[in-house]
Image (cartoon, rainbow, N blue to C red; front, side):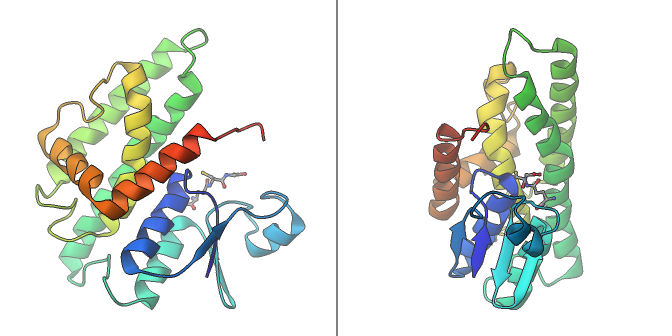
Length: 214
Ligand SMILES: N[C@@H](CCC(=O)N[C@@H](CS)C(=O)NCC(=O)O)C(=O)O
């Protein structure tokens, strides 16, 4: 199985976390010549990563790939079987994906204090805090985000946490959890878990080497 992408992308990281958790063998690579070549656009007409090629099956969009992997490889399911448990895990994943990650990534453009728009920064930080209050309510308080087991909630939360941890301290949130108790405990678990902390370390390495102008 080929996964086109680089782990620094939070969307690619979701797929990598799923594949590694389930023990799915894969190769990760960036498309030769970039994302907009006719060859790559033939695989993914959106010209984005992640894109996956599994034999004759080609898929794109991280959520679709994650669901495909979980449905195809039935061991260590990340979507719980019970409807209520699955919904709970997906709800946590969705709040991270839709309400925490976008304002966190939006802060990237505000990194330079010389050109920073303070009003935008304040709006984004307020949005992040409102969303993290929701996360704090939703977190299970158990080992993983949605309960005792690693689920799709963690697949979405961990890459989002990576960007929170690297961005928020520069914007007045020295503790990127904002002192939230369950979130703090959960982040400690992410850092302690061998597989997840390995992915977070690779994302950090990717960020060090990242050159957007390349
Ligand atoms: N909704 C997509 C988002 C994928 C995405 O935006 N990927 C970025 C990398 S972080 C990308 O490929 N950007 C290149 C581009 O849009 O040209 C998913 O979940 O897979």
